[in-house]
Image: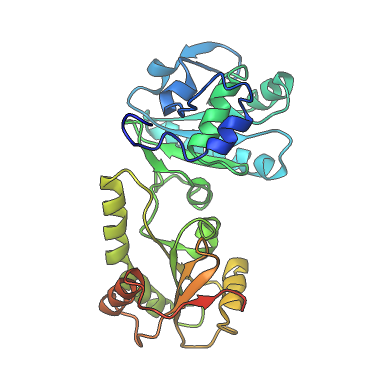
Length: 305
């Protein structure tokens, strides 16, 4: 913005591609409520006012389509969870955001769901929501709070691992399991502790050593309404596909009994990573390690080299 110096959009390329005539210049992204519009629809096609339907509620945006095999697997799980949660509380709703190829397919798919949907005709809204939450694939499930702020833009894994809804509204945990958070590695700096070869008690100690700093990073980001500068993960599954892949790329070798490896992955920085050489993993040594990373005093390594 020439007047304020503030960034209007970080996704100008997509905005221009979708508006070749320049009718929407200067391509300012819609807000959440602008994108959703004033009307939502029930599975039977009945229209409801968005403001009334979602007032005071946590709600999930479910990006999905009937032609998507993973969606067909996830939708029944989500439906069962929705029924369990709404049976005991009245502050939860889901809004289906369709990627179906036509309205007939949308109506057929939505008819099997127990929640609301963005009207299929609101294609601009669907595009705006996908851009707002950087949706790159489906199914994607985003949790929004009653205040309109994002609780978790990647809530699918949290929902899948909580079939009883005990962790509602599925806010991100300070330290996530690597296999559940793997999708974020390509976009975020990540500290990963590999604990596949240690006892469950020791893995819990390592996780606890990361949690204090992880909570601080999340709190600082929340104050600025930004994404955390670093995500924190623990790998505990010897057969985990993401863990195996990251181990290989970092040259960590096979899982060793009693051994904990820690690395900082900075894939956005042309595939960089930084090995932890601090000995025993404690809250203090982890904090020192991250401080050195931020001060650019750790030796840089290249993934796959």
